[in-house]
Image (cartoon, rainbow, N blue to C red; front, side, top):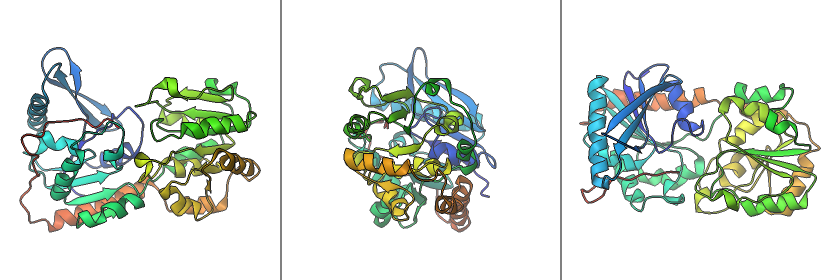
Length: 384
């Protein structure tokens, strides 16, 4: 195991949704110190750092005075970052990026290793910063290693870096397999009749809301349960039907209890720029819960899950409804799905990433550095 502290810069709040960064960094924290540095929040008074421990990870939240210019925000974040390094005596460290926007205040760092875990095509997301692609190119120039969150994203990026590797979404099988044996429902789901089709995940521009509404209209007897925070879209635009239930966000620990009461899982993703390269973590999670799955034809779902017959693929409301009808009449748990999941785990993913990091550490002869954005490029955020 590489003996370096980990400084992670992310556009995602630790407490938002437990997903790829949390799964990986919790495992990293078992062996070394991990500092998960979030984007700043506005506050009254002077700039300061809020720190707390979550799942063994030290979560760091910069608090900055309101009204600062973008250049002042970058300068303040740099000062707070230097303060963190001094106070925590961080000397030898690895920098782990989820957002290229963090280059605005990290270019002065001298890490032993630079990792870019490219989990999404952030530039395709709603409200992405205009200069994100420029920052990404600088990060690709600086990074020793690049990981991608799926095969299609790997194929899109592989010619842009010399040491890039695909690590698709994985799964904590024991956690979601609890859904196979749980009896009873959470209170807000208990009164919903069956049969039930459900989705859990972030509800944003990646959702095909017309498909969801059309499905609800075609199958009024089917209860559709949608779980997850609504972000970047107006909640008033969510379709409303008697058989469509928006239950809001739920804790990761509680998800198996909800999935246990479903008859089929659905992934009604839209076909747009924001879904072109996604590799949904929920695909293996639904299969681990023992649920049949119906999804739109997202590339990293079709390959491999659709091709292997583990997930039904449909795009129109009519085809989606027909696929659900078929799924409602199949066994809840399939041997083929379990055989596929036997080779998946976040532990294995982290071990594979560590092997690459250790290789780079052992062979590194370069002077630690990061590429700096031009001074005219201000700090920015990427709330996706």
